[in-house]
Amino acid sequence: MKKLQDEMKKENNPYVTLIGNYLLDHLKENPADAKKLEEKDKSIKGSLDAMRKVAEKKKVGNMAMLTDAEGFAVVCDYFGIKGKDDAPVVVGSQETDLVINVNLGGR
Image (cartoon, rainbow, N blue to C red; front, side, top):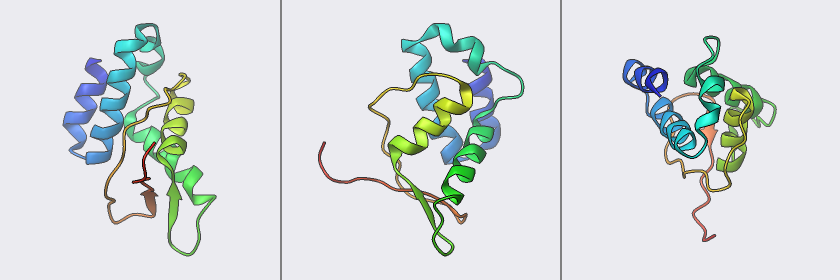
């Protein structure tokens, strides 16, 4: 948990914070996954790069979108963990080609 919290503080990036909180919640329910999240060559920022690469494959013009489920599935795959179905909703974007689509409809 400390590794994730340290990266979240260091980066000062709302997306790193969002993914970090998702992973911290995951650890509470799946403490056995801690070793996978502690790997030195894995980082929250690295998982965002993995999402960007997946989104680029769906790129139309200068925009690429992933659903919440797709984005969090990429994060889980990057860390080698099994995700949960109720991924948090992402709102907003930064000036990059990475955009995460939000479904505002009901469940």
